[in-house]
Length: 276
Image (cartoon, rainbow, N blue to C red; front, side, top):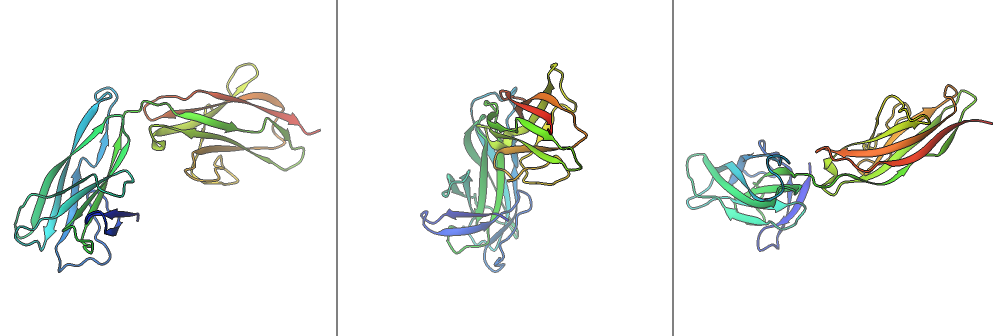
């Protein structure tokens, strides 16, 4: 469960929120059924994805359609909605819902958000019965926006040993291959990071290519040898034993994003030699 600090009353009173999904919002632990409260927040669309072909690159306005159930609201009393963009501490948008009364009141509205189709963004939508800082009966949703990628991934650094001695006993040598990769359109836009081994005759070693990971899973019996999750350093590992033979190869490193844009290819030598 994630937490967000934000300010609503004259941007001075700080509250703590619990995460809630778009269609199944959660009440806080000290939920008070005697006071006005909101539940069952539904946001449409809950995810926004711009298409390179149909949307292109342009300024545009999103419309978030909001529906939430309100309880214990008096006459002329309505909840507020606040929209936080990215990691901002103060809402970019803050307004009241239109008045609508029934035994179980359903509040509805549409929120316009100005953006660009190339932007990758996260919107946190907060619904509160009032702007009082001690109000805890809120509902929350997080909406993600995937923009049109315009930047290919960039490989900043690659590493592997240039030479490894083949063991002449029953031992094995762990060899890691790592690549530091970033994407200016957002790290979550990176699809995969690869290496391939090219033999001296120009042929490529099968399987081709091999996938690097940034998951922090470091095991001794798989290709996963990543040390720190989500640090933009992607890793694959192999184990050299006495069954390997001396070879001279080049390692090609490259990355592809979710729109198919490909990074430059970085190359390093990787040679296996006899243990003399």
